[in-house]
Image 1 (cartoon, rainbow, N blue to C red):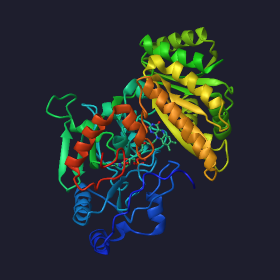
Image 2: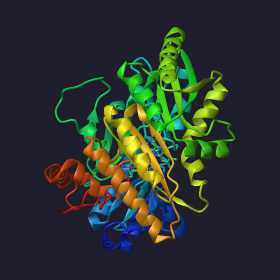
Image 3: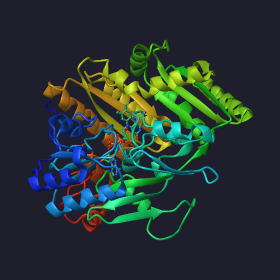
Image 4: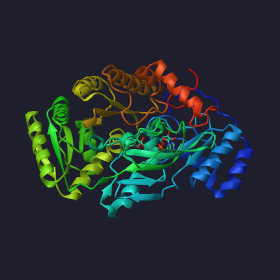
Length: 471
Ligand SMILES: Cc1cc2nc3c(=O)[nH]c(=O)nc-3n(C[C@H](O)[C@H](O)[C@H](O)COP(=O)(O)OP(=O)(O)OC[C@H]3O[C@@H](n4cnc5c(N)ncnc54)[C@H](O)[C@@H]3O)c2cc1C
């Protein structure tokens, strides 16, 4: 593939003694086979894979500590690995090193139903967690499309379709345990719902993308399963009318649980992929949670707003199986969109703007995309002001890669000019590093760099990501 390479960084030497010592400590849970390394040296970004030197499957905080201390002794990089679903080059071993696979640390450590909290190991996936909570009447709402690990979601500050109601990982991680680059173990936060006790290290680790430490336990907020749920679909004459319906819904304070925008091209992809028969127009998917009366009232209000904006035929999905068909289709939208252009890869972009600027931002983006020869479906968690464009490229055509990067730059710069952000939820990884400086300015990045230098003075933890080591 010809996608522009991430900043050139030399691979660090990988001593054979380290491999031998890891093997003697972890036996068959250490692999340096090409296939295992290839699986761990890539993600869903359009970048070429860059393989770690070896992969270790850890089973406890103590084991992570041992691996980190050994790597620190030899100056070898460490890349924590959750489920490999990140989109911006987060996992590429740009300087080689050890990938610590946390998928075998997937236990629920404690459920405190009275306090609505749960403590888990990082490798548990969001679906596994909700399965474990099934009999408690509680659930964990954050749902990135992929079945990501809770550790990966914490490390990328992920969100998803229902962040508009329940918040993102930032609001839902109460505390965590992390192994630092020198092997020390820190615990941040408590199970209390609030605290003013010192610097908020929990928030520092949430979104740190593996660059500050390996997260080995996470305490999360839970929510009662809503008494009533209903979902609906509505098609709109234009992108602007769909988005204005959402803006007004949020501005009048409807506590909507999910509101997702899907443009007509993405609807076509979803119909084909998930065997649905939605009208191929710009569409909103809605979901309402609450008491039966509350849900009805919310739905009524939103239906009226949609009608004022030309929404055609509010169609209800009331049976649980119809709702899950709809939301499964939404969660599979990324893979559906890839099928619009056989053999393609997606350059995804994920901007987020203040809700009052959303219509303007989406409409200007649509104008740009229409003028491009590349297919560029748009989907979005628009209730948060967040939308994604999947720019579909033939990875063997440099002119398509250039065009995708040109579009990406325009979309991101527009969002930043509107007081928005270059990434609402996917994170920075390698792909958004330059935009981070544009968004925050050099002094803010220097402050982030000072924290990184203090906690990881030998640049061992996922090096080369988020911002450069040197100014
Ligand atoms: C189809 C699809 C849809 C998606 N939809 C969404 C969406 O709606 N919202 C959203 O937010 N994202 C979305 N994503 C992106 C992705 O799912 C998220 O970024 C997710 O949080 C990554 O989790 P993971 O377990 O796959 O982490 P990985 O990809 O394995 O890792 C991601 C980063 O976290 C670090 N990391 C992982 N585990 C740990 C740990 N225990 N300690 C320290 N660092 C760690 C890694 O080093 C890496 O930098 C989507 C991706 C796909 C493919």
